[in-house]
Structure formats: structure tokens, C-alpha cells
Amino acid sequence: MTEKTALVVGGTSGIGLATARRLRDGGATVHIVGRSKERLDAAAEDGLIAHRADGGDRAQITALAEQIGRIDWLVVSLTGSEGVGAFADLDLDTLRRAFDAKFWAQVTTVQAVLPWLSERGSITLLSAITARASMPGTAGIAALNGAVEALVKPLAVELAPIRVNGVSPGVVDTPWWAGLPAEARSGYFAQVERTVPARHIGTAEEVAELVAVAATNSNITGTVLETDGGARLVSIG
Image (cartoon, rainbow, N blue to C red; front, side, top):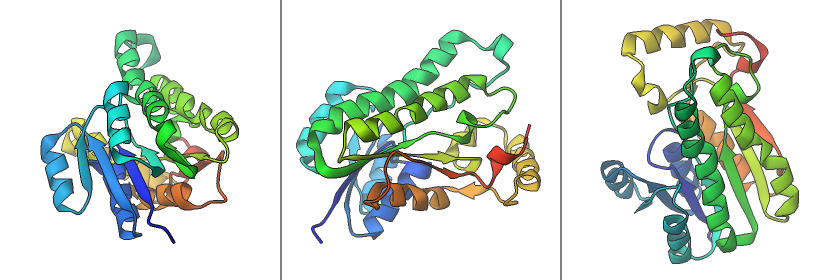
């Protein structure tokens, strides 16, 4: 099999980094994109080809894709930490920033990379379980992740035979939670673990396993794969 080339945008930590490592271990040449020089330097030492760029900047991502050349698997793991809170008090400027950081950055990245995707390549987007759950205080990010997921089916048809999929994680122990004090975070994780049917908090590596399947399996397209421990089936507050 011809060696594959993967580009993971948002690949310096959490699910993105775990996905990059998994694809690398599967024999692909893996390029990652991020903004933190420290994280990029660490990733480069780990056998990944690191690039400093902003996923929301069309010119930067276009220049990078042109530099790489043919790309077989594009994974967009861009996210942000804003947009959570009671709807009545939700600051709309904050929510707009959240859309810029995740939804618009994912759209920008896909448009910029599209001319360099191989004909039988794939695009994998990262959403989250809030798009289909009913947790109080998540209306903002539910709308954001729902917008990401809404791209999947029409693009799978429009861009065929390029495959387009999404992956929807639940509560995953990643740096996304770093803004929450350690005690509050561990308390919330314990509550979730008691409530979800799998009785388990996800790991970045577990989600990355499914992202890699979505990216590489030539018979999956137009699908949002769930990896949430069953969180969508229950109320976790």
C-alpha cells in the first residue's frame, strides 16, 4: 500500500495529538498543526511533523497544504473552551468567539485543504455529545457542535468520493478541562462515571481510535460516530 499522508489540525494536545500518534503508528506520514511552539516542539520529538499555524487563518492553512502537497486524511480537531453557561446569561460575544474557534475554523480549514485532498481521501471533523444531549447550561456549545455535525452529510455527498465523517466524544479526560479547578473537575468526573452506562470517563486515546477508523476506513462516510460511554442516553446534569 502506498504510504498515506495525514494532516491533523489542532494536533498538539488531547484527542488531536492522540489521533496523530495513532495514525503515525499505523504507518502514515503525519503532519500536525497548532499554535503553541512548546507543544509543537514536543510533538516533533515524538516523530510528528509539526507546523505552527492558526486553523482559522485561510492563508496560513492554504500555504501549509501547498507545502505538504497531496493529503489523504484530514482530521480537524479544533476546539475552544468558551460557550458554556445558562442560556439567559450567555454572553453572545463569547458565543461568537466560540463559533470562530471551532465551527468557522473547521470550515476554513476544510476549504483551504480541499484542493490538496486526494480523490479517495477523507475529512474527519470533531464535534461533541452536547450536539445531541440535553444538559442544562450547554445550549451554546450544543448549537456549535450541532453546526459542525450538520456539515457531515451534505459534504459527504457533495465532495464524493472524498469521505466526510464526524466523531462525537462525550466527557473525555483531556486538557479541555484545564480551566476547571482540579477538585471540581474530579468531582464532576466522578458524577459522570457513576451516571453514564459505560461507568467510564473516556480517554483521548479511546476517542482517537474511532477518529482513525473514520479517517481510514474506505467504507464509512456521511456518519457521525459516537464515543460517549452512553452519555446521550441519560441525564448527567
